[in-house]
Amino acid sequence: MVLRDKFIKKDSSEEESVLICSSTHHMLQADRLLRQHNFKVELVPTPRGIGSACTTAIRFAKNLKEEIKDVIMATDIDWKGIYDIEKKNRLEDWKDIWNLEINSKFSRVLKKIAKDEVLNISEIKTLLKANRESELEALFLAANRIREEAVKDTVDVRAAIEFSNYCHKNCNYCGLRRENKNLTRYRMTEDEIIKVTKEIYELGIETVILQSGEDPWYTTDKIVKIIRRIKEEFGMKITLSLGERTKKEYKVFKEAGADNYLLKIEAANKDLFNQIHPDDNYEVRSKHTKWLKELGYITGSGGMIGLPSQSIEDLAKDILFQKKYGIHMIGVGPFLPANNTPYAEYKSGDLITTLKVVAVMRLVCQNVFIPATTAIASLDSEGQEKALESGANVIMLIMTPPQLRENYEIYSNKNMVDLDWAVESIMAANRKIPEYLNLDKLNRIDRSEVDARYTTG
Ligand code: 5AD
Ligand code: SF4
Image (cartoon, rainbow, N blue to C red; front, side):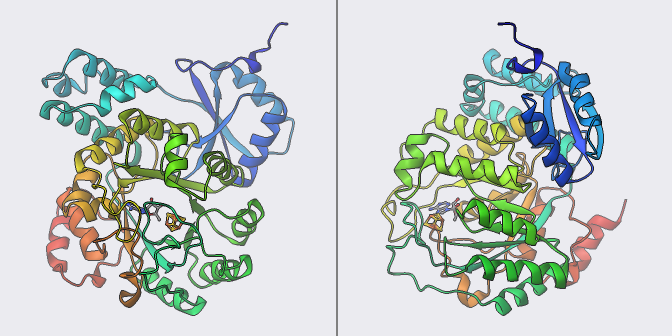
């Protein structure tokens, strides 16, 4: 049988193009249509240089361009254009990196990144194995440059409300697990959530993250009401982080106005995933991730570094998972032992490995949001600043009311990242504070100090 072009599996070195539509609705319609026509297409974060990291594009092999155009033109799908993904060559620009003392295997892989070539798992492992000072320097430098090219210098600041610490699951690593009887449980009311959202809105922040344990007490209707009120009263972007829900619920939340959904894979090695999640299943979590994308969410995922028995190969798989599923927002942080859990006595993930994963994630996934997570800040007080220097570009504030936040103890000794802390980290990393932030709300930092740094020159 002769295979037509569109059935041929793309090989990783092949040139690619993307289709961009005028809205998510049209994008999803185009994606469905092209799949029905048996084109091999993928929903991905819009590639660097073509659009913003928080939008989605449809990617396919460049040789399908004309055929795809014909199919789309025969419909009323509102599309903006088809763009070739440009491959850059940065070998010249990265001369300083090649001058560092790095071994030839390591340098060969970094050179592939410099030429925009796709890495395989063993090449990703080579980068993750960096341990000489000069190799780490090269890795972080390269990641920082790709970060600058893809998402520029401004650090996006978002804020989370941890509105319930009830959870019906029993993940082995997490302090909110249902068998932890030593935790004072709380649930915030709709009005309490709205009140905190208002405080976040007054900080100038544009995205609120509603996070909780898996707590069915918040029924579909309750969540929908909260989403609607936030949209009506503040018009903010909403990220939901509620754990696994049904496909129908994801759809209803999306229609009510939710923009983003954060559902971490935690560990992309199936056995490891199943070992740490007694109530969950790797296939189910992956399927939910796929649903979220198909429903038009900007999706968040990520995982933990330093889990018991996790290998370098596992970390490489974590990175490839995010790439394969076209994740927009990738949160990685060290595993931190939580009191009263089966993993309470295990040691924390280490900072350097975490920073390496952040860096390689940036090199592989490029035009995505990578937060400098609270877990990194909790492991090391300069951790967030270091993560920003290794490829990260987002900070999430914790805005849970002070009397409740100590009970959102997913791990012990959690750092409380507030506006001042975030601004300090951004300044320490020599990056830009977003213009939307209301710096009048700073408590500890002297406002004039910030202005002096950012308004001159
Ligand atoms: N260490 C680090 N991160 C943790 N999380 C939960 N428990 C831990 C832990 N012990 C993170 C996971 C999860 C979220 C609720 O918090 O990534 O998705
Ligand atoms: Fe619950 Fe999430 Fe913690 Fe698992 S990781 S116990 S689902 S809050």
